[in-house]
Image (spheres, rainbow, N blue to C red):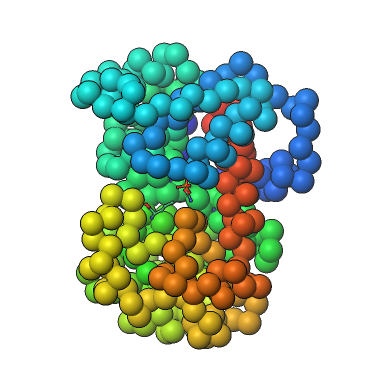
Length: 300
Ligand code: CP
Ligand code: NVA
């Protein structure tokens, strides 16, 4: 059987996405130590970039399910010395049961998936961060119920997180208001694929009006550190602060994938305030990814 990969949210049907959310909530509410569906199975985790949440949640999730996880860095494997991706995918997938990658180039993950005989999971690329959206959507469903028909405001960089929000809007059928500084918009083909669900606004205040969920991310993502100063200028009017929260619906939630920079993309009173659910969101990485691992790895 051909393996099922998870490269973007568009790999899921709407029923599958909702099924993963329900399963994640069930796994969170009832942890049965005797339930070990991945006993003896191994997840290889390849990290070209840093991680706290993604690494720990995948590793802990595999241990909870009776399996184990290998942390692999290009620095210590032949990947860093230029071994072809195709060869690496064939070799690694002949020894493990699933591969999770966090890479710079999105094509590294798609090439791995093409040549792997086991499921490949995108743990973040420059283009997408779909695992984070599983956790974000679980968090929204837990606090407010189904997100269908609701309005989400994305304020900030048109980056990997923004792209995954656009895909989530398509699969779960919500509206996405985007406010990005000029020159930092999301990739056009991803926006176009979402059709009328995605709308652009020239200010964060306008994008926030009527929103049920407000989301932002760092102004400079991993790999863009040298652009930090230039981005601080471009994004200076794009902070989610109390005024922006006031423009949204009164029961709107605030999310951020973390790590966050208080005083830049979000003010401290918002991220540490009553509408913020960032720590539920972070914890849900574990539960949502356990549901994902079960979905991908227990199909045999
Ligand atoms: N949100 C997220 O992916 O966090 P890490 O970079 O710590 O994995
Ligand atoms: N956009 C951020 C997300 C980190 C989880 C980055 O790529 O660095």
